[in-house]
Image (cartoon, rainbow over all chains, first blue to last red; front, top):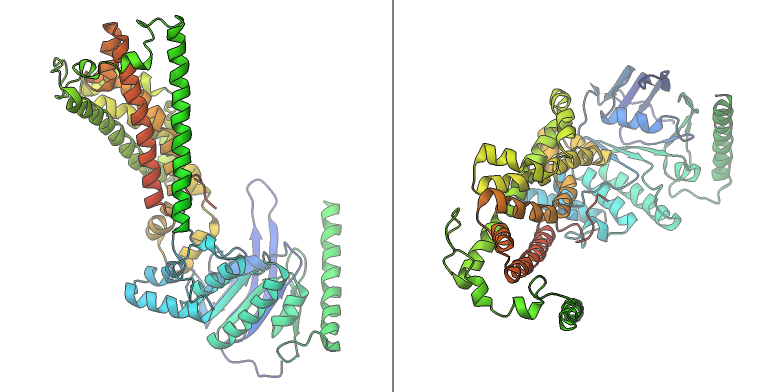
Length: 267
Length: 281
């Protein structure tokens, strides 16, 4: 990227490692010495083979998991516990089935003690923004997978997060819905001004969305390389440069997948 | 409009099949009596035990007092007796649900409580509620309490064990969402965990409903001295087969109605779950 790095990154990951110590078994190094920044308003995609610990990194930034060593800062403050400023969206929408869509979106505001009338207003406004303005009083299971995922985005957006983290948010959706959800996400990203950190193992998703792609190695997860995507949006899939990125990521990932397999066979 | 008509037709046909099923059963019984295979003194068919309802009703009593003589109370006495029995079941189930959930949650969350209580609970859980009857009478004496206690025991242990298992199976992401939104442990429990496990706890209560009805009758015949159970037991002692079958019919109807009432409550309070689906999604 040609921009100068801002003084205070939105997320600063400094020398972060995570070691799992399952009872009665040898400790597993999930992540090793990660060190990178996310600029305010930047769209960063974490790409890597499955099991490389990229989701674990999201959970640590969210404050749901502790780092074993190193430091994570968001807007200059050390992450010690979860906060609604750092929204997290999962592969399944995880809406509460006992609440209507509008109440699901208002859930966080209600926990924060916002008055009922006000929180309903905010929830309705947010649902309109994600195109679910006429689904307010539906049950979650009356919505399609894509709509549920949008409602989950609305639930996070209603808290006006500065960082939106997404753990393979579209992996469970069909291909057509997935493409539409990617456009939707770019639009949300533009109007909210939040930084986005998205985990995926889809190369096309990474190229279509990211400002920068952080490529992970197989376990123990390390940053293999960081690739800025220097293409205008919407990303031209027919552009030869798109294919160059595609080939580059394919090559990077294949090497890691092979290494992971070789290691599994050795064990 | 169309939908409600379809629902109406479906209900009508369900009712039709119910009537057909009961009629088939009753006619088979009548036939056995007609050909002389069913002794009317021991197995009086429906037309006999339903023949003299006012006569049968004189064995029911309005007072719900131990050892009071039947006042020949008629229909109102029957209703009062049935209501008392139903009330014992309802109290026991409610207490069992509330305290079972409470103890189950404490066991799940507080390690020392779990270590101290769980082994004993696992030991007590398989004991048949009927075996608790003498204990109930020793402790509470003759009266309503032992019957309620027995119903309570029927659901209490099942709910404790189910609560722990249910809390453990609440999707992790629900709890993550609550924590990200800033909920402390108490709010997470009341706003997320409890609604997530409630449908299954309710299902546990429903599965134990018939058990509760069995137990309450035994308790009434021994430990209360009033109620439908006491009447069945008195009918047996006085060799009054008509009264036995009449009371059995009443018990059947009550059991059916109470299951219906529970299902309705489930539909109203747990509106997000379809009636026959108990589980988490």
